[in-house]
Image (cartoon, rainbow, N blue to C red):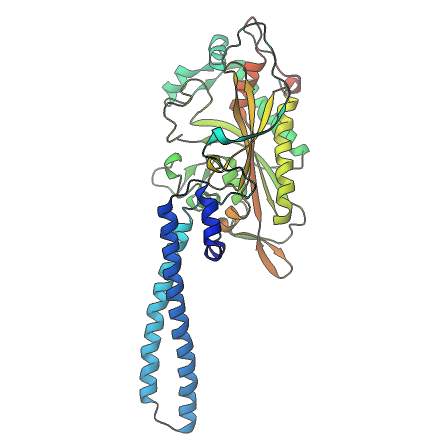
Amino acid sequence: MVDLRLLEKNFDEVAKRLRTKGVEEKLLAEIKELFETYKKEKRALEELQAKQNSLSKLFGQYKREGKDINELKEELEINKAKIAAHQEVVRDLQEKLNNLALQIPNPPDPDVPIGKDEEDNVEIKRVLEPKKFDFEPKEHWELGEKLGWIDFERGVKLAKSRFSVLKSTAARLERALINFMLDHNRSYGFEEVCTPFLANSATLLGTGQLPKFADDLFKIEDEDLYLIPTAEVTLTNLYRDEIITDLSSPIKLTAYTPCFRKEAGSGGKDVRGMIRQHQFDKVELVAITKPEESDKVFEEMVECASSLLTKLGLPHRYMMLCTGDLGFSAAKTIDLEVWLPGQGKYREISSISNTRDFQARRAKIRYKEGKKNLLTHTLNGSSLAVGRTLIAIMENYQQKDGTIAIPKALEPYM
């Protein structure tokens, strides 16, 4: 959640950063007006409380001196009733502020490039050169259908569009990739965790999926449960409403889960193939750190995901997301985009974000520093989207005869 105290103290500066992320003027004006009303009512409450203290002292003095207290007693009762009424007003305004704050995204870091959408993202570097084929490379959906690896029609029959079935070598390759990724992440110091694939609303609120992105979630009817869109949700919320007594070193976690997304608003995008599915496998990285360590851990997470692609021999590039393309909870994000020769372009395969204390404030994740309880920083990243990695292998390792070679790094897992 956005820091309301910071927003109140430096409204113009924070609002300026939020505008670059696409926050509407109407929302900013609404919260500014609410702040002003809240401050006005809070000052009035404090004045009434100060008056009550003064009258109470005078009441005690009158009693000691044997003076008539009836009029003063009545004034105290009237003022007490005013205090109760104003406390209710202030509580109501505070609740409205908190509810409004839940709709406001994390302000971008000052060094994030300003831009409108993905066209304004900034390339940082490239890793590995794309292979030059002596034939016209095919897209994964064509390769998959010819080899009997992917069955799109039966995926639709079993569920609906944007579902598919992996068969034979593709199914084994998917499983091999999951194990390969988890083992790799463990070598980088990430503890493997197995979490539920469903989460309640408090959990999704903690990481920022609710209330804003309810339309993109699959909800279980008559239950306070949703299918998770990413393991970031469950891994981060392991420490929800907790005070971590020892954060001398970052908590680093990794998990495999299937992920479920309605892909609301993506109509017409990537309708063919497996790029954008309602259900997909992903291996996730999450870290919980002290504020002063989050930048270092962010770099380590980017390197961890990139080295996976390097081991698999997949050309990729680092992209710094501009303000307009940043996710709701992210203060800074680097995407890794893998080269897909069938499409002739780079496509996102991993997204690593530092959310600073935004999620920790929502989820109340704190750590003990001396006698103080301070908010942690949380970070998350794909390591990697398994289906997209499978696609990248199919397109980059395709042979002239239509078969697909297996990367050497995966041979022990096959």
